[in-house]
Every structure is written in structure tokens, then in C-alpha cells.
Length: 302
Image (cartoon, rainbow, N blue to C red; front, side):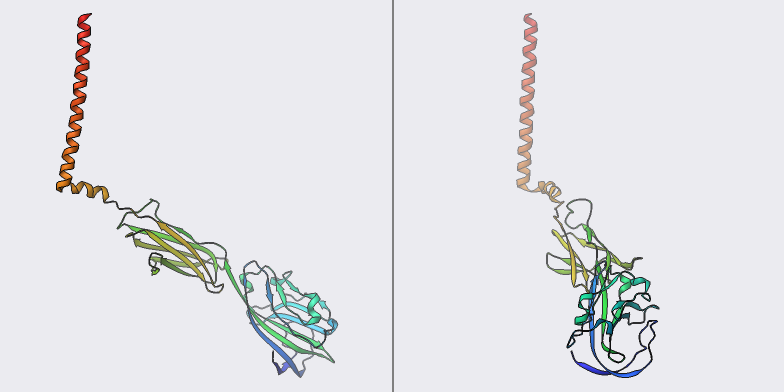
């Protein structure tokens, strides 16, 4: 990493430590990084400076602070002359920050930020000072922390009645919650991989800062339905996909059979069926008559 001579002012730190305002020429190494972390996890903010020999900790100062000026309190973590001093630490970060104590002498000043939340999305600055005659800046690093969340799976639902009929309009609903940042939603027809346009789409930001999605899709059931709802989180480069699949029936099949009775073949089949029914009725009548007649003869003999 290139070393750049910079003119530094020692009163740039947002702390209550007493510094004598001196302008001195120092040599610093600069880092600019981006870290992506999910809600509830632990983020490691990198700050590494490789020395020619190990640092003496009581001649070392490490300051972590918010660099974007978005909060009135900017002190995140402080290590001063061999000791951690969190008396000026912002309340939001109390008991949530750690340095790698066993690695400081090797130039690893990275910060662990525990239980990440949306309010932690800032640009953080690591400033390292080393004491020769006076303390001077030897390294600084800016780390942009981006927070993301995919805390639930989308829920895709269709009509309550099973097996819609051909030509019938079907409404599908896709709901998703607790996502961050604002997600994208896509409807895909998997029978031909075409993109479908939602009938309605509402994306709202909840009280905790995450987003919820409510979308519906209306399609005509001309064939078996295979539709995917896709929720895209661009920051995490993740897609949450759920598939709705449904067989479509032909409700006109019974009706068409009745209408086809006008055809000659259908007429012959109908006449034959009627003849069979009449013959059965005749046989049943004859049997009942004979049974009744035999009973009468029996009574007459007695």
C-alpha cells in the first residue's frame, strides 16, 4: 500500500483528550474499504498497518470514530497508551466493540462491532498514532459499513379452489418482510421464462427500518401454471425464489360431450343405450309378474 506524505492537524479527533494543536509532517498509509454485514451479526472493520518491528503498546494510540458526521457523538472505540478508555464512547457502541488485543503490537488495529443493526450503517475511521518525541499519525483507514437483511422467505399463494379452469383468471399473491435495503421483485413465467408485470406492487418501510413487499399478479390460465416470485437483495447479491405450480383442467369437457349428441355416431350410441335400458326394464317387469303369479297359485292350493 503506497505511503503518502500528508500534512495533519492533531486536533481532528472528536474526543475530549487534550492534544496540543501542532502542524507536523507525517507519513501515513491510507485504506478505503467497504464491509457488508447482516443484522444481528458481527462486523470486522479492517485497519492494518505492518510495521518493521513490533509496536510498543504504551507508545500507541488507536482511535475509531464515525467519519461521516451523521451523529452528534462520533467516538466508537479508543486505545490510549496501552489501555482502552471508553469513558467518551458513544452510548450506541457501549459493550459492543472489541480490538484484537493480542495483535495490536503486530499492527492489526481492526475493530469488531457486535450485534450489528441498521443504525450502525456509517463510514468509520481508524486513526493510529505512534509516539516518538510526540504522538504522530502513522496510519488511517476509512471503512464503509453497509448493513443488509434477508430475515424471511417470500410467501406465494394462489386461489383457494384447486385446479383452475382453462381461460379462467387466476390471482397470485407474493408477500415478503424484514428485508434491507429496499428489495426488487420479479414475476417469472417458467413455462417460457418470460417476465410478467405485477397487477399491484407495494413496498413499505417498517418501523424497524426494514422493508416489506406486497405484490399480486393476475394471469389467464391457458395452460398449466408455473410462476416464480423472486425477491432480489442487490447488496447481498441474493435471490429468494418461490415457485407456484398448478394443473389446469378443461371445464368444458362434460359440456362438449352433451353438445356432440347431434353427431350421427353419438345418436347411434344414444339409441343403443336407451334400448338396453328398456330391455332391462322389460326383463325386470316379467320377473316380478311371474313371482306374483306363482304366489297366487300357492294361495289358491291352500
